[in-house]
Amino acid sequence: MDLWYAPTSPFARKVRIAAAELGLADRIVLVETDPWTNHRLRLINPLAKVPTLVLDDGDVLFESAVICDYLDAAERRLFPADGATRWQTLMLQGLADGAMAAVGRLFAEERKPASERSDAMLARFSVARDATLDRLDREMLQYEPLIGEIAVAALIGYLDFRWPDRDWRGGRPTLARWFERFRERPSMTSTRHRLPRSAV
Ligand SMILES: N[C@@H](CCC(=O)N[C@@H](CS)C(=O)NCC(=O)O)C(=O)O
Image 1 (cartoon, rainbow, N blue to C red):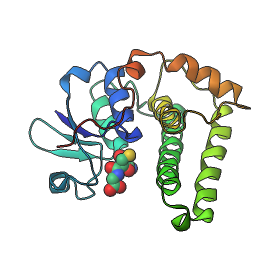
Image 2: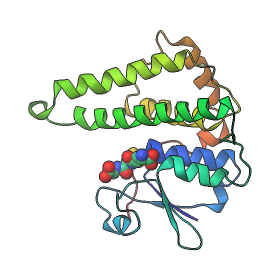
Image 3: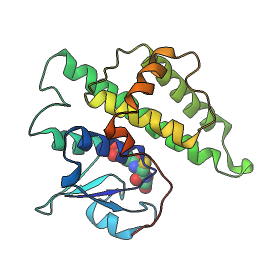
Image 4: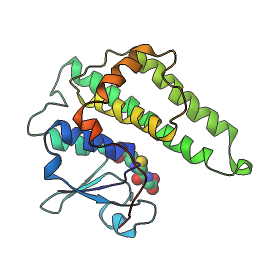
């Protein structure tokens, strides 16, 4: 399988963490790309986004939640088949994914020249980030992850990568404690963000 990814993408990292947790990382060939400039990506994914997974038979999957679900299909370790836990973990994934989209837009907005920045957008994305972190501080996050924990770890890893000096941990001791331990998992240490090296 080929995983088209960008080393700065939290959604792609979510898939890589899930693959590592499932012991599938070495079945995946990583194809580093820049989704903004690589026109070949749009030939296989109309949205031209990462992550995009090309299966061995040539079928293509996109959307990180779909790719993670596919990787988990053989064992059902990350996505419980039914029951309350299923809905809780899917909700957590949805929340973390939504916050990742908001902070991705926040990062792009902050990088614009001051004259082009929108205070309303900056405020909206910041509030989404802060409200999500407050909510996550009240969640019972586990160390043996389901997909919800993996998505939360990808979100927080991205915050640390893009804003290393911001203190999101202050006032959120439960979440901070959970992440201090979770970030040491091999699935996390083997998938750290970095700036792009090359782009196909
Ligand atoms: N909902 C998608 C979001 C993927 C996404 O937004 N990826 C970003 C990189 S973090 C991207 O490829 N952006 C390029 C674009 O928006 O054109 C998922 O879960 O996979």
